[in-house]
Length: 424
Image (tube, rainbow, N blue to C red; front, side):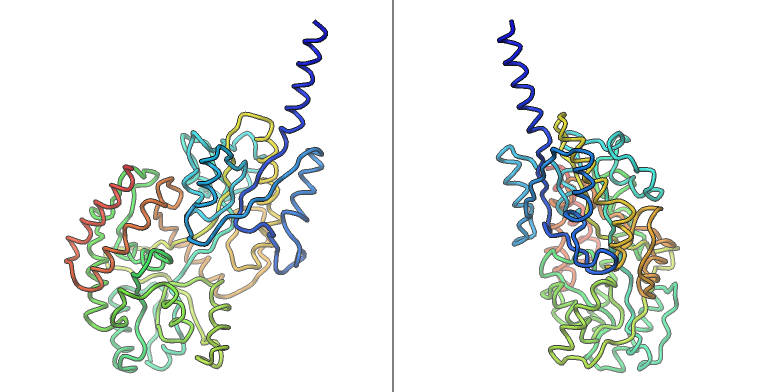
């Protein structure tokens, strides 16, 4: 009897000793903050990990790096295939959303102690069957970035809540003044990357990708998506966008923006500095141009145009062991009010009520105002099938921009492709 008891105790001690060893798959194993009180420090190594070890002195965390060569979920898929699902996965929703599933993700409601600090509605897209399955990190919403230098040259003032008609008036002035050397806006369809810069236009016409919380089928056609395609073709026919836009990609779009060649484009405040620096180094511009952020222009039938927001999320693998509590505690610390306050210096928008904004930037404040007044556009980012639905658009969009398909036929094709991807 004593022998059996000894064997049992030894096995228990062995299991418990390894129960707190967790793996953490992330896009950035350094996690260095670039400014503020923690400039040059890691919010993982210097902030969260010491806090975790006070709670769980025997915990050990192995950091794993996401392979970003293709933008696909290669690293995650390899771990899942080998039966070594990471205890914590932190990545953009483009990839992490595929794990926001009840059968995989740990419900965080009884593990994360400060869920009540998250702003109202922030956690709703991450709930399944009423349970919170992921924690969103601060993100970057986009706005319509107006080149104010161009506006001064053409003599046009963009209304703060402008319409598609206002946009067309502006576009005509740009075409007349610059004669095809600069354009009203940009378009591209050579690849999937950066598609959110284009897809936000659907919201200008009231089109919605999904009913709230229902990602089983798309509503993009029945809510008026053809109007957006009709608008895209008007841009091409009237030379409001560059010729051959269908074969341009998001890098082309951003580069032309930085050169000052687009009057009004979807953009992020955090993108401006790096792209301007490159344009200055390459002597395309001497200095940054003046900008102003406003909402996307709206169709007369639309009251407000919601904007797109990109962010990452933490997803914890449900194991039913002591590892779950350790992993949840680490995530709690890595996304708390202090860390989000420090991250606000990187031109991202915190999502908690206990955050102190440390950056007073007019462009970021304007985008925050757009988000507050107009809401967020749901393109299905938190849907587990998002990575499958995303690539189906650009081949159809190419045909639209090349005037090779009618808007109604194109939106029907897009609807079909989306629904097939959702059913896979």
